[in-house]
Length: 407
Image (cartoon, rainbow, N blue to C red; front, side, top):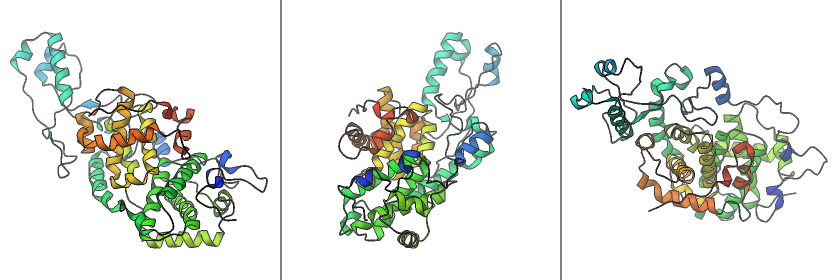
């Protein structure tokens, strides 16, 4: 029996007509998947004592903010001696205050002489001066990972400079639906909302979901699809993303089961070959996820900011109109909007601006759109993201009040 994308409850809640254990409720891939799924990020944390990979989540843990982030400015030996030999680490200042793509990630040292007024001041006055200096400096978010080989501090900036160049290759036309004759934007939204629920029930990694949506859009941009095969495209895209990102992957029978036997094994295998050939086997493109991890580290985030940022980012995945923004821009706008929601004050620091390459003014338009999605997230038919983040696992992030973005 085929599953229609529109007005079909099977898309939202796959049913088990054979009396087997409900896959959607069990959180496992059928009965063939063992309970040893573990993401490389978790393994890296165990090996590195909490250190993250190149994505930049190295020194964050739990609900604590980055404890080891330090401003890049240093006191001279003379000043250090005059402060009662107290051991204080003030970071070095960066010469470049207006980052560009060419100098992204280049840090330069600058010797600072001690002003005579500072030498003659008392301790209280010195603390005020240093606090003012810190507010104007850019934070070295990788200083805590110097001894962590998994954090690849030596070339993490080069990695993200490369990601920025490569993200243009992952962009799709924001009006590609005009070339489709049997599907539309609403059907795409229904499909992705359902896949987000499947992704949550199967307990897959964040990377898998973002890559799944990227594969779907890039394929639909190049290949016309009839309505009855749209769900098949989504299932196979998730299968391919699992093969790329996960340790344990679903088997073909799992896909047949959650689609209520709408597709056969041969149809799934044929679609897998078609997607890979259409995309020329190119799956190594940066999604919003890799930028999100780095930007959250730049924001010195805690678990609340993490969960709310990802909640807003996944709301954007459902919306077709958000395809006009690059992945890095969506990640930056999601972090900025989450900050406005939680803190209600301007938190977009020079460090965030440096690492994202986006100023607050550039993010405002997209941020207002995200606030609109947040306001209606719990209403209507497409509530998969809201229900996912309205659980204890994600800190009930969906219950946060939408941000108030001021002009």
